[in-house]
Image (cartoon, rainbow, N blue to C red; front, top):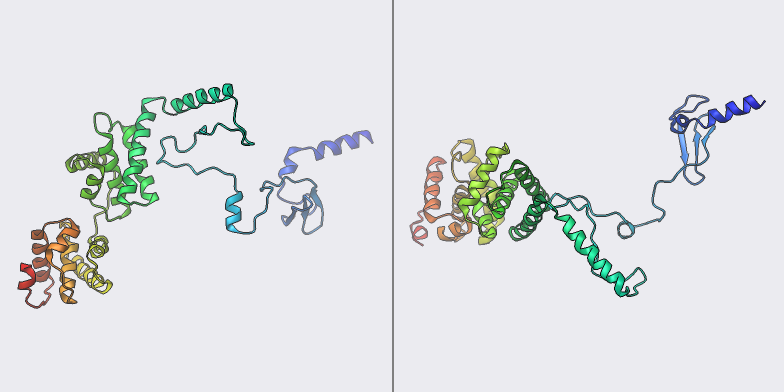
Length: 326
């Protein structure tokens, strides 16, 4: 009898039985987990496999999404736009304990020293200092040009790749950050021009363009061709052009794409010219100067693209001599 009891105890204490995914009696996989009683029961024969289960969920209950979000105690997700990806801790500046009582002088001095060395340890190496400065510039520039969070994350990844490749050495951090943001905008199809980003970053446009070409060459980035359709709404919003006119401009650009006339042309100039033609068709009073200023191109570019589109697509328009002069 003792031998039998020992064998039964050994059989029960085997670790692989705790990971069983089927019933040992009927070999059924229909297992029912009762979290209230902590039991796992076979749904076919009724055998109780486990009597004690660990509930890995939270100990609190929530009935609404707001209540669930307020009671959650997890930290922020990892982000490439933070130099340490958000994994480091921060010692608060509040010199009080958990009950709100003020800390004694000796403890406050100790916390001050720990806070100082904790900040120093976060930017210990030259790479960390470079990333800290670059991510601060990325945060400032992304908020100034108003780009979304996914594009900012892509720009941060592009900058980290450039840093690992050694492209930042000997070059301005601001120019590399601006080039990374422009590359992320191009890859995501966001209608941001190189001139806008360079003006917001206070870096010369040629330097940003040079760093952008270097990143394309060294990091093997494959950028899609800029579509003039993405710039229609941007130009139209600055001049208060109606949605019906914007739809007509989009149709003009689609016809130009089918006839392969828009290939090799500046997308911003093509969008401005198509929008100007659509304004004439729908009798919306706007000048080439207003369109050119909103698009960031010259009036000569708008006029040349307007004449070429009118000729290639055979668009019949009324005489616009007065409008052209104005």
